[in-house]
Length: 284
Ligand SMILES: Nc1ncnc2c1ncn2[C@@H]1O[C@H](COP(=O)(O)OP(=O)(O)O)[C@@H](O)[C@H]1O
Ligand SMILES: [Mg+2]
Image (cartoon, rainbow, N blue to C red; front, side):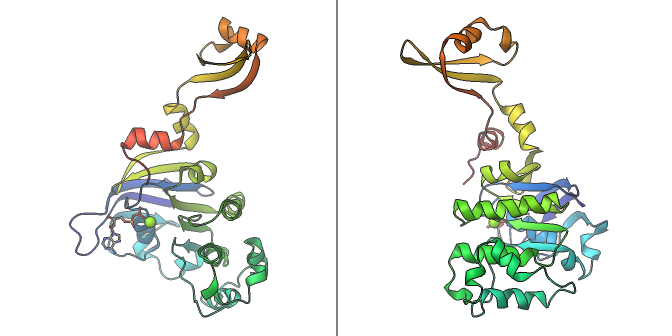
């Protein structure tokens, strides 16, 4: 679906390249996440992929063609949402959607239905100027998918949203995946990445430091142990055991059989731990 090789990009006037030789593939029906701290190049790569920033080196093969050689019909097939909502502030929510719908050849999805999906139906006739950041983000999001694209680019899709609204957006993204759509997203939020992405790439200073599924990364970098909290003679105890031959471990058996268990957790690494371990950076 999207095949990127040795991608480099330099802003005019900048000293060096902002993207420094990036390689990755995204398969059809996959959610692929670019993770990285602020300033690592996430927004830049999205803008280069969709053609908003021109003049890259290397190759971006998308829908079977080189990005540079694809005409305007590219925009019929892709959906794009940036982390800053760019909307017509003097128009209502619904008018914003209606206006953008004119740009596309295909008729849009049912607008009221989309508005309802993100909780904006009661506000559809209000001008966007008075919307909160979260309302604008939600409107911006449905605007990006209303023409039913097959490949989506979402830049920090849940930034500025409260947990309830973030979940609404996450659910829509997962539903689109289940319909076979392909999704590229960027985030500096590891929880979002873990919940949504089939694979993630860690981006640091314009380079990919690591790329794999969250599950594989957690197994590879996690401690292969299980931690058990239990009550023993009225006091809380904690023990950690290696996963290898766990069933044959006598102390483990004794605790499981005779103590009141409070909790049992395998000690997987979080994506955040892995990011810090691999890149030596925090995700701020
Ligand atoms: N228009 C621009 N001109 C020059 N440099 C830019 C421009 N936009 C972003 N940059 C620089 O490119 C780097 C990556 O920025 P960006 O892609 O916005 O990172 P992220 O989205 O990961 O926070 C930063 O060092 C930023 O200062
Ligand atoms: Mg950004």
